[in-house]
Length: 312
Image (tube, rainbow, N blue to C red; front, side, top):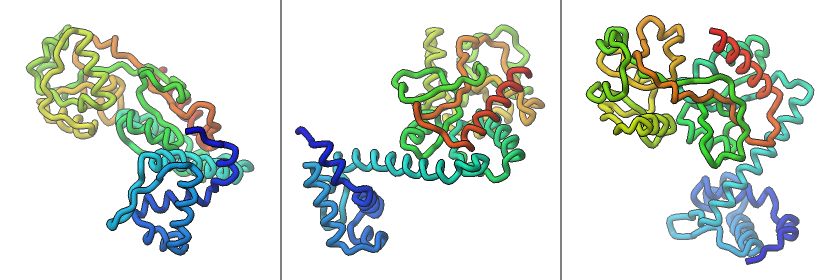
């Protein structure tokens, strides 16, 4: 099907996309009608006009309500990007005279919250009118949120996975992994260990499907070893550290976590070479998308913290 993009661009309105988004979120035209303060016939006509213009059905209608078709879902995803870019532009206009205020939406993983917290602390002291919304999760889900424009930036461990040409990556410092245990764990006193020596240990690991879980799986594959049985599998780094603190469990996390002041007294790296696991902690944004003044100030704060980390 060939579409007349110029004609569609002239006739498809932001109001129509907003209406479709409201219907999708409400699950019915009646609820969307109340939310938008429009009559139901007006909403039905707006959808019908869009479907006629695009030459495809956007909604499946039934007695239980409405659901997006595949075409509708694709249009909604792009609509959210359009509205986010518009909102982003309006924020830039509003803050152009004073880039030291505004909201920064940050995504990060649990091990990197140490860096993010320190950068926020420095920036908040300097620019108290900047506010922060921080989402902690797995790298893969955070990058998806970045693409959907629900995040402004992501700070995470980055090992250059393929298929990310749409992203801009600024590497901050190297972050190799390490096998960690409580200081009381008998394994801490052993020298020149290998991963093969730890097959019978009580492991707590990330899910194999998670970003860090995939990195750990490849680590064992390079040594031609099967992934050890994980007694406790969880995405939560905090829970894994609590398990390690019992003195029984071991786990794999970024090596620099041992150096954090909250962990130095009890957490230890086993004497084991994982130098081939080195990757960078990076500042990730959408390529060719201008970031706000506040986000740029946060980037500078992250660079300063990274310099201090490297020096330590």
